[in-house]
Amino acid sequence: MEEKKEYPQISLVIPFFNEEENIEELYQGLVKVLTELNKTYEMIFIDDGSLDNTYQILTRLYQKDENIRVIKLKKNFGQTAALQAGFDVAQGEIIISMDGDLQHDPQDIPRLLSKLEEGYDIVSGWRKERKDHLLFRRLPSMVANRIMRFLSGVKIHDFGTTFKAYQKKAIKGIQLYGELHRFIPALISRTGVRIAEVPIKNIVRKKGKSKYSLSRIRRVLFDLLTVKFIISFIDRPLQLFGLVGLGFGGIGFTIALILTIGFYFFSWSIRDNIGNLVLAVFLMILGFQFIMTGLLAEIISRIYFVTHRTKIYTIEEMKSRRQVEEEKKE
Image 1: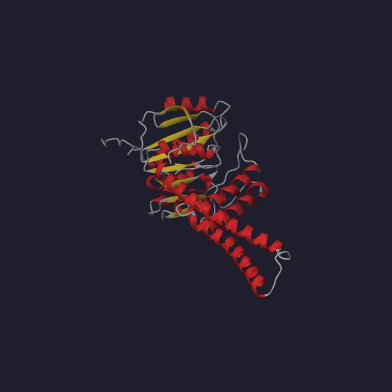
Image 2: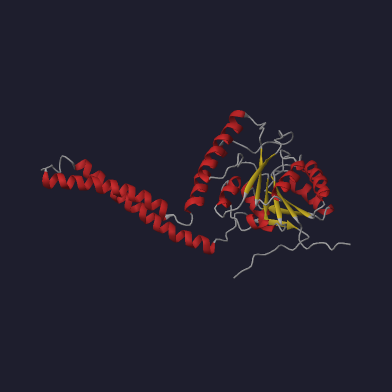
């Protein structure tokens, strides 16, 4: 008889928020697919501060299935924090994340794994045929995806879906904030990982209430800027702020130089050009401030890489039959 491995081969990370109507059906579908794969696995279910019976149902499943681990967060921290909690404790060599609202089909899991076996570090689902509302979901998503492809250089079509498979070495250690779980492939791309995508089903929600709102569009747009900064300038912020500072300062200096030449050689009146003089001084001060901001950002960036261990969630309770793998402390 083959000896049971200490750690599972696959970790499935699924956050839930008020999904009591969908949990049982999703669980049954997952068990069927994961059993057919003939691989060891764990299912990490995160209750993100649900107000219904989500936690009670997850607890009941935990009591009857030794492959389940349940994390209960103290309040609703949001999907990004819930996923981060799952990633932090996941022990499988392959980590798969997906939603808990039945809009992701467990039958697509083998397709992600098959692509991963070709040598990729991340395989993202692609909702090629979207079933969502055109104006409120599909159109904003299309715009955001195009912007993200342009900013990050990662050539995938669907950054927004949670349904992704990761090699453990690619995802472990990542720190997520805001709505950044949508842009994990872009965030990790700076490390040189191989990324692919496969088409997945896009199922219309049948039970429960959607957590999507138009306010999320604003947050996603700001996170796009954050992702671009992290990808391109997180380890060299002075390159960004310094460039902007030199631009403003250079324009201001040029204006001041022209005024000086005009004053000494062409008898220009300072009084007649007081507005241009004020503008020149303002631009030079602004440029100086941008450069100083870049220097401060350089210092903060160094501190970030050395000491960044802050969690964006708080666990109230964890149910697990496995010992959580703790990070090594220097």
